[in-house]
Amino acid sequence: EDQVTQSPEALRLQEGESSSLNCSYTVSGLRGLFWYRQDPGKGPEFLFTLYSAGEEKEKERLKATLTKKESFLHITAPKPEDSATYLCAVQAYTGFQKLVFGTGTRLLVSP
Amino acid sequence: EPEVTQTPSHQVTQMGQEVILRCVPISNHLYFYWYRQILGQKVEFLVSFYNNEISEKSEIFDDQFSVERPDGSNFTLKIRSTKLEDSAMYFCASSDQQETQYFGPGTRLLVL
Image (cartoon, rainbow over all chains, first blue to last red; front, side, top):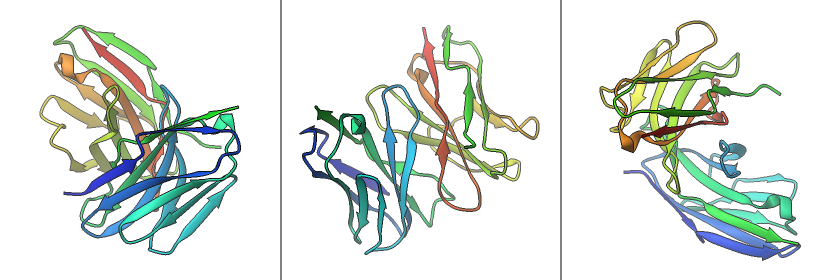
């Protein structure tokens, strides 16, 4: 069964304090790994798609990387507006297109 | 920028009643999905829909659930006889030929 584990569950940072979020996965043939941001009471907002080990994607203060077993979301010099829950999801070749999500990392950035 | 929309944003219903949740996917997308998120839990896949038929469904998507694309723009999820445990946020998503799924804002369903 495809599984996604995210750590830490929650992370509190000071503004400007860089850190990384982890997403470990087991999947029967990875089609893609996805990062989403979710604000309270809202739908997941797409951030990145990674397809193969070694791939990296960047957007503003965020950078996502992928290995054969895990992905990292690096946050450089975060701002309070980066506070949200960050979700990782995988899509396998065996499933038609369903995403399997982790439980997320709740990030709080204090000014 | 095109986005997925959902109505209503909130729905309160009595146990045993039928509810229909509505979604308007991004206009050129071909693949449609429903997910749900029980408060404090992970987002869970319910069903995917392509070419006017269900392409995959989860164990959660039992006989009380159905999906329909009644016209060229809407995609609906019907729950025939709601249970207390159906209370959750329901998200619609859509994608084109690529894998990236774009999610709507959700419908918060509360079953009393």
